[in-house]
Amino acid sequence: MAKEMLVFERDTRSESIGEKIGFACAYILFTTILFFILLLLKKLPASWTYLHVAAITAGIAILAFIVRKTVQA
Image (cartoon, rainbow, N blue to C red; front, top):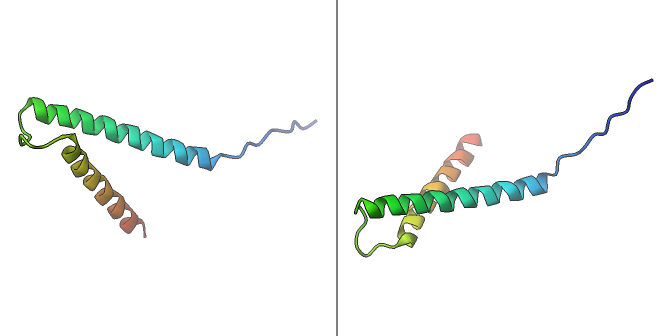
């Protein structure tokens, strides 16, 4: 008597959405912590806001994505 096992397919769509949401949450958390550290240490120019720090970290993340895609090719 052989037991039949259920085989479940992976839901790649929900995994992809989960990865993107996770990346966005981690990005916002990292940027916020970095902003407050720089603010408390008085290392930010007086005219800079959160968006300036977010733009810099976004640039680094985009550069990392480009490098990863280039190396994989």
